[in-house]
Image (cartoon, rainbow, N blue to C red):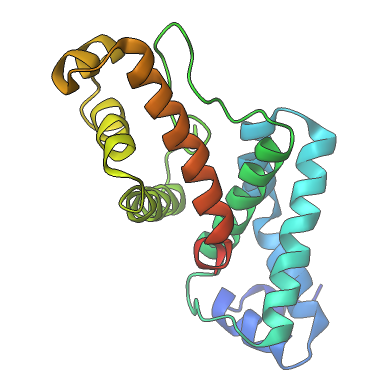
Length: 196
């Protein structure tokens, strides 16, 4: 790998790849592969699955760059991390492993979002994902939105939610379950927005 490529910024390498220099992409992958792979592995805890998602991430990156619709100049790594994060969500959704809620009252929609290693990139990604989720939550029916907001942002128990909203605990749990099902559908419908 040429040292001259290694010294270039991500934005310059992205432009180089778009202009036809295949080695520019190889340099980008080499530069960021450990961080991206570790992020994916920290969510799925399976090397084969992590490698598959890593490959799928760069297939999506290549397709986006080749279509000429990449608009994240100077933010290549956070953009790729968001793509990998969305593919992790897809993986959990396809295998029905996104937790809906626990009967022991410990539901957390953000449990697959956080990165164990705090750094600038993961903070930016987490903020973006939370912002994207907030936009989706607004689209929920009001009774589902109310329960989800109380649970996630006010950290209330389902018993407290039931008392405040004047419904049974089972109804509160049911609304939470439908809220999560609808959030999943919205994530799927807005996939282009979430990963662009």
